[in-house]
Image (tube, rainbow, N blue to C red):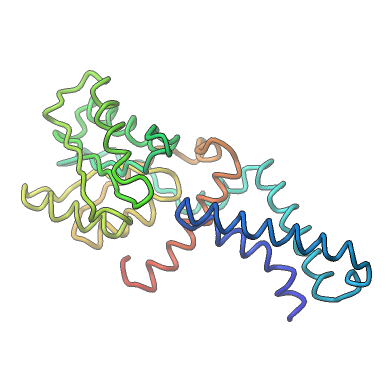
Length: 259
């Protein structure tokens, strides 16, 4: 059992680190790689350490991690993991289109996922699938309300009536659960209950259940389908990280009673 734990530790640590907020993620991965380099350097200086069982198992664990990362970067494993979470796009109209905007880069520019979500929401508005488009922009201690700026600028590039576009900006929006709660408080004042929910691939399942739990009648409107889900991210490794995040999120939300 100890052997298996040591072999799987590098993979488990790396996957766990990728689920942290960006500054912590960079620190954790950097620290892990630095300690690994030091560990191997010291072992090289003392050849007898190679026969030390914990070192041998950890070394094998690093090899397992390298193989996993190579496979995930080369093949759309994330797409296969996300496939069970994908929901069919609703063909019904709604009282509002709700887009979960998905953050921003450190420079304040739209990320690939955010660009896809907002673009899809604007297309649905142009198709008159609902009279109102609500775009939810989250908050983080890392980049504050960075996504609100690019969302406001980007929506003005489309030929839509800007009075039909509402951008939500609040420090209360930090997770999908808090987002659903805040949007419910906002839209319930206008009597809006039936929504087309726009988000990306695997996230649609957890988001739809969370919003339904807050009293919405949710019509799923994912940005991808069963064919395009394999190309939903900028690269396969990012897709894998997003898929792992969703499965972990589903377990956590189930335990917390958010679903």
